[in-house]
Image 1 (tube, helix red, strand yellow):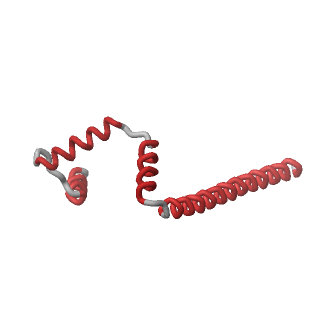
Image 2 (image 1 turned 180 degrees about the vertical axis):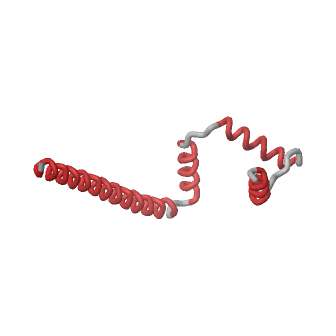
Length: 102
C-alpha cells in the first residue's frame, strides 16, 4: 500500500512539474513574441509613409474577410445615414432588456 501512495505522489508531482514547465514555456514564448512584436512595430513605424502604406495594405489583404458581413455593414451604415434606420443607445437597450426580464 505505501508503494502505491508513493507512486501516486510521484505521479502527481511529475504532472505538476510538467504543467509548470508548460506554463513557463508558454510565458517565455509570450514574452518573446511580445518583445519581437514591439521591436517590429518600432521598425515599421520608422519606415517612410509610402512603405508603411504598402505594408498596411499587404497586411489588410492577408486577413480573411467575410464579404457578406462587410456588405451588411455597408448597407446598414447607409440606412442609418439616410435616416431609413434609427439607432438605439446601449443604455436604452439595457433598460429595455432589464424591463423585459422583470
